[in-house]
Length: 158
Image 1 (cartoon, rainbow, N blue to C red):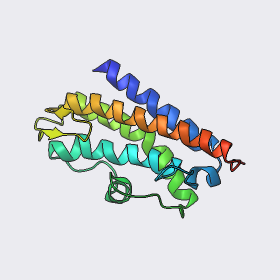
Image 2: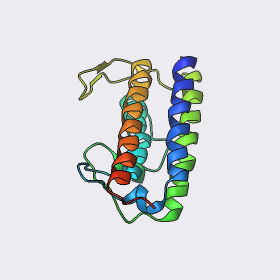
Image 3: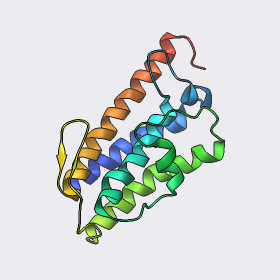
Image 4: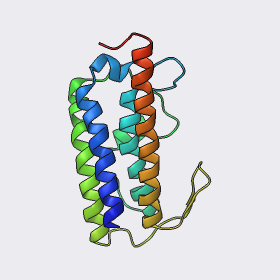
């Protein structure tokens, strides 16, 4: 699993870089053809990791429920995000990756409720969830890159 955790850390570093190097205006703008903005996609990764790994294993979230409720699947972008929330998200991107690895190493996930994803992939245990979560976050990283290109094409970037 070390390989999968290393991949997760890298995707999170990539997302953090975008969060920290993209203007607030660009983070919160919904480009034409998209349902959400860059910021939502990044926060969504944190929220879904909690659902896939902690909720389905019967454990408490490791973050405030606000993040899960606001950025889970089926939610839409909030364009009125405070700077302090952006700073919190930067922290959560790195810390929730570290915490997941520590919890896994400490056998924090003995139970897991099987779940069929909207991708058609069946998750049977925490290992499946972690591997799927990496794929999920990588897809959202791709969305973020596409949104950045769309904003440039629209001439909206600062």
